[in-house]
Length: 355
Image 1 (cartoon, rainbow, N blue to C red):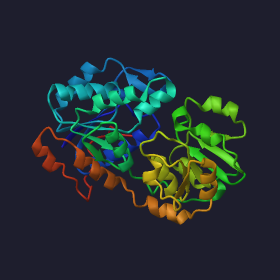
Image 2 (cartoon, rainbow, N blue to C red; image 1 turned 135 degrees about the horizontal axis):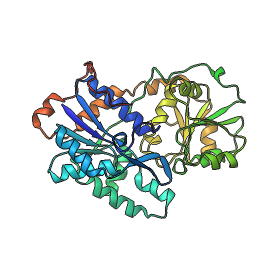
Image 3 (tube, rainbow, N blue to C red; image 1 turned 135 degrees about the vertical axis):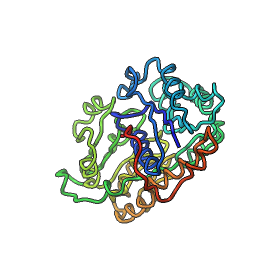
């Protein structure tokens, strides 16, 4: 099977969408399929207003059409709603071809956090973009229900996995800070609700691992908070594992891959009872969900690290990729038989375009 995966979110961005795509591509290739990624790396770009880490492709329509014409893919997956995703969507619609999309980001809520745009207008745009897809892949049952209530149809679950070899319990002595250590890791941006966490009255140390457009302002407002910047790989995993509670203040995430990464390190979660955490966290076992985030954090401090780790071990990228493959809509019916999800996922990779 030749899969065209079109995404406006790609390296060097550091976020859950890019990590999800990287793991999925590796698993799809390991199943013996060919993946061609169409990303901003192939185009001239400009920074996205209010979110400069995201680069938006300029004048992408014709080039995307040429790439898809030349590739003649067996399946097209449109991962994002940006310029590249729009061009690929329109190519499929113009040729009356089946395709899938994904809903990684609560786009209307993100826009409203930055500008006075009504949610109704944002969801009208979402319905228009995804409405012609054969299937739209969503992360959790609660996200599916939320989107169905907004008028979206043909939704298919596509869960997430976690790299439990990288994210695993390690020594607490990696961080020499007053305890308890309350951790936030991820993008530092207004829609992540990080201000809710930093405003909490908690003993010990608040640690922020990550960067983003709100970082400078938050450093000025919260001089006692430790800001560690972006960390990657073993360094990131060591920071997580050496903390005591992961505080996840976002109300806008569709899943929250970081939740699984924290639990895989044996770190309990404190979060609001909203889409994402309510599907991923076992309340009272691997974390505490409460509208009072301070109360959630203090209660989570006493949860069992082994239970957190055991829960994370139930989520594999192999299982996630089987869901992804089962949802694809194929241009060529013969390709569907070839691409039926396999449990072994053992063949050698065939593409190097991946994170």
